[in-house]
Image 1 (cartoon, rainbow, N blue to C red):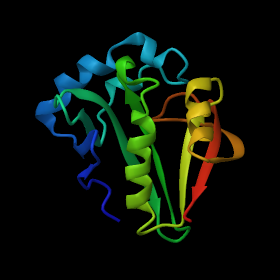
Image 2 (cartoon, one colour; image 1 turned 135 degrees about the vertical axis):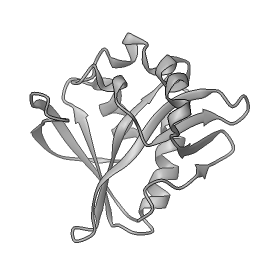
Image 3 (tube, helix red, strand yellow; image 1 turned 60 degrees about the vertical axis):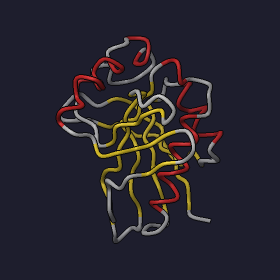
Image 4 (cartoon, rainbow, N blue to C red; image 1 turned 120 degrees about the vertical axis):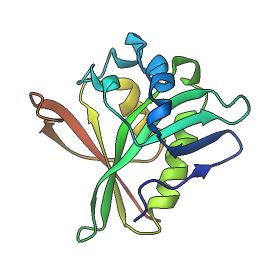
Length: 157
């Protein structure tokens, strides 16, 4: 599965994050309110896989990535996603996730999302996408202490 294709619709474009774009993305990610409900509030300091841009203005609006592709289980995870606050409530998250789901379902049957158990904004977003809550588990990211997450799944149509 190509985990860094160029994906786009009429409003957004996702491109593999290049090293020379990190500072621009860091400007978006350094807003502490983006991470207020996140179990790993320092997540913005890590490199992401996609730069997400507003197509009309070409400005950086967030990041996301595919990770942990498991061909045997026919699944991949989508996560490490964040958007600038001016994108909240605009449908951008749904557009980005739909692009990524459509791409993923060419190769896998299931897409998995880990969401911080207390992150109500992301939990609501998962429900709006039609994701099924399948379990809770503790997840440790990059050697950090484990944090309680809920796990959602979307199955290919």
